[in-house]
Length: 84
Image (cartoon, rainbow, N blue to C red; front, side, top):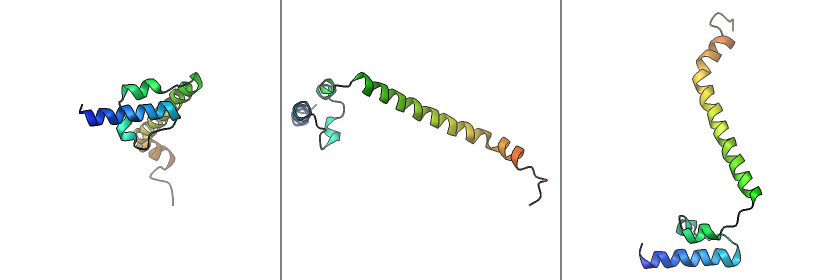
């Protein structure tokens, strides 16, 4: 890692620690061990993050299942001999 980039990450981490605000340029902060160690997440924050991830995964799973069963649902609800 070049020294200029490392200095930018250190500066960003210190700014987050001191002000408790996010960096304006998140791209410089991502992956910084210093930044990750400065984030104080409560149990409630972690719980919300996990529940949001589980909800997103379930929503994606439901969408994929619906795609696979679309032909079956179409045949059951809209048979070919159904008058228009």
